[in-house]
Length: 135
Image (tube, rainbow, N blue to C red; front, side, top):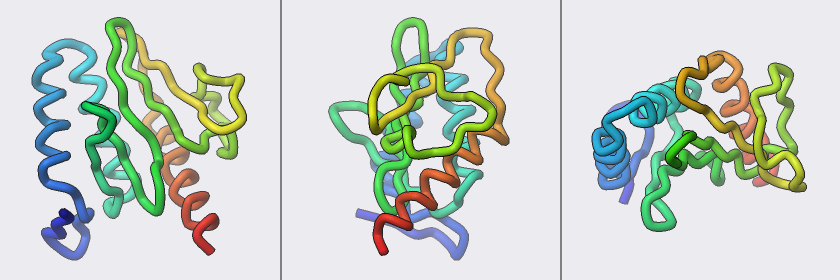
């Protein structure tokens, strides 16, 4: 079920967005703050991005295919880019899952600063890659 609340609004699964809101509130520590911050950056990178809730509790952002997931662990918030190995990463944000042929991840630990512009560039590149694969 998608809902579009305006010309610039993303067609977002309202239930998924609510579940992501709840996850952020549940975490009530640096992980919740970090997940909220990356969520904001992802949504600002492309207002048409779709929020989903998959695999029993994983926030997922999609547009033309999965862009990235946002998993939370005890010591990290992990953003996994489904096709990260094919994305340019000039700022070197990818620091995890570096050995695979497809995915790449960013592990964010307590106190880490997030390069918002670089993260948004990765999100846009992932969306462009998804769009190019559809043609």
